[in-house]
Length: 112
Length: 112
Image 1 (spheres, chains in turn green, purple):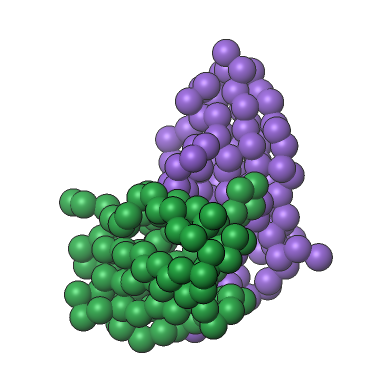
Image 2 (cartoon, each protein chain N blue to C red):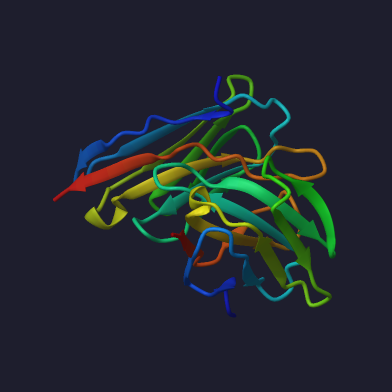
């Protein structure tokens, strides 16, 4: 079975631009969560979606938004990019919130 | 007080020794606990989950949980150089979101 897949793997954007990151969960998993990991820190929770509904949002500005599609795939959008948004963005899927979650390979975003 | 505290390391152990990684957490509502391994530049990989007090063994790995003390640990027996990585402790937050709360991780270096 395929694991969690994220695209793109690497991305370079200019300050002020917008970016969309994509995630396909493991087949059968209905929950998708997004995390941001900056160098030297643990991942920080951004969003969780379950059955296409937002279940939680972390302490991130409104420039960050996400959605989950009927096939349970998900997109994370970040508007008005700042240099500080440079990080590894991780998607994790699980069949239900609270049980073990599996991460994709991540999207490394660099804002210049 | 940080929500999840881990010694950042590096924890250096000789090949074949037991590596002991420790983690304390502040949220008494946490019910599920996970250990992830993260190689440099890669995404976190789930290696252990534990849900009840006591020990859980899986191959060379043993997770230990003490909810009264808000303490979880990971033992790695017969450590190998390939175990050299950052180990992330991640309790879930409980509630509707069940988001994972990560510590900064402990860097383990296994010396050949």
